[in-house]
Image 1 (spheres, protein in one colour):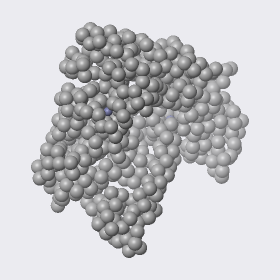
Image 2 (image 1 turned 90 degrees about the vertical axis):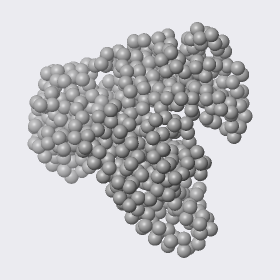
Image 3 (image 1 turned 135 degrees about the vertical axis):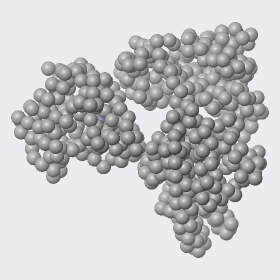
Image 4 (image 1 turned 180 degrees about the vertical axis):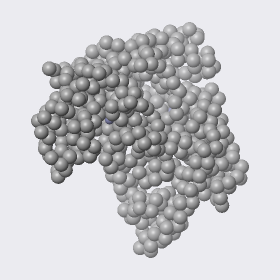
Length: 592
Ligand SMILES: [Zn+2]
Ligand SMILES: [Zn+2]
C-alpha cells in the first residue's frame, strides 16, 4: 500500500488505472507467531488495485466469482465483514458493501443476514447470531496509514475495507472468548482476502470528504486460499510446505501429527523457505538489518532441527539445505531468481556456513551459560546478554535451566527484549522514510530537487562534496554536505541556476535495480555510513547512460523534473556551518 499512496491521492500511475500482481512477501514481525497452523513469515500475495477506476460494485462481485466459480469454494462457507461507521467523525457505515454482499449470496441461493458486531470483544460477547455479513469497527475494518479515523492527520486518505473469511467448521475454543465470530482467533475462520476502499480524505476541520477519485486496494493470501480449497485449515498442508515437512519427517523418523513436534516441523519449513528467497535476493547472514533477520530464521530453524534430532555432518546431509533445495524446485518456475547453478550454490553455501557458525556460537554460549548457572539462578539480564551477545536462543536458556532446576526470570528477559526491539524499530522506521517527513507531492518534488542540488554542488564546489545528512518536508529540503568554507553569493546563484535549468529541461527520473557493484561502478552517490544490500535501487535523473545525477535511493521521486515547476522555482534559503568541514543548506521551491 505505502508506495502507492501518491497514486491513490490522484497522481497518475505509468501502468494505468488498473493494476494487478502476485508477489512474494515477507513479514519479519511474524517470526514468533510461526508454529500455529496459519502464520508464516513468507507468503505469496495476490493483489489488484483500481486507481479511480472500478469500485465496490465491481470489486466485490469479481472476488466472489473468483472464490466460488474459479477456485470452487462453497459459498456457504464464506463469511464477510464491512465497516460499521463512525458517526462522531462523520464516516458513514459501509451499507453499500453489505448490500452488494447480500445480493451476491442471494444469487447463490443463500439468505445472508447482516449483523452488527462492533469491536473484537463485542464479537466474543455477541457471537454470530445467524449472520453472514458482519459490521465491525475501525480497528478491524478501516485502513489508513495512521490507523483509525480519529488518528488520521488532515490530508490523509483512508477508507473502509471488507474482508472475506473461510469457515473450516471446526469447533470454537472457549479459551479465546465465550462466542465465536469471524475475527475469532480459535482457527475456525481464516481470513482469505481483503478489499480496501480508499474513498475518503480527512479535512482540516476533522471531517471526512470523498476523494475525487476512489480506489480499491485488494490483497489475498495465496496459501490461505489454497488451504480453503483443500478444506484443511493447516497452511503447512499446502504443497510447497508439505513437501518439506515430509522430508523432515522421513529423516527425523518422527510424525508431523505428533503434537510434541508439529511446531518444530512448521518453523523449519517456513523459516527455510523464507531464508531461501532472502538469500536469492542477495541477503547474507549478518548482525544488522535484513542480514540479522536471515540469521535469526536460519538459527531458529537449526535449533528446531536439532530438537527433531536432525544433526548433520556436512552440507549434503543438512536438513536445512535439503529443505532449501525443495523450495528451489517448487518455486524456480515462477521465481527465476531461484533458478540456475549460481543461485543454487549460493543458497546452499550460505545456509551451511551459517549452520556451522551457529554450532560454534552454541558452544561459546554453553560455556557462558555454565558460568552464569554457577551463580544459582538466571536473571532476565543474563538471559538477554546470552541472547544478544552470544546469539544464544532464549529457548535454549530455558531448557538448560529447567534441566538443572534453575529459575529464569522470563518477565525481565521479555522486558529487555521489548526495549531492544523498540530501539531497532525506531531505527528501521527512520530508514524506511529515507529522511522524508511524508509522501506528499511537495515532499516528493523536494526529494528530486535534493538529488539535483547535490550534483549542482559538486559541479560548482568540487567533487569533494558528499552528502552527510538530509531531511525533507513539504516546505523545505535540508542537506548537510562536506565542504570547508562558506559559499559565496555567486556560488549559490550558480547552484540555483543549474538546478532550475535541469527542472526546465524536463529530464526523466528513472529507477533501476542493479547489483551494488554495478551501481558503484556507475559512480552512484551513496549515503555516508549507510550499508546497502547486494541488490540496490538507484535513481538517475536523465537516462541511466547519460544521467545528470545517479544516487543509491529508495525513492519516491517525480517522474520528470518538469513536475518540480508546479511547486515553483528552486531557491537556497540558507547556507550555514554545522561543524568543521560540514555545511548545511536549506532550500525550497517557491513561486516566482
Ligand atoms: Zn472461535
Ligand atoms: Zn534520494
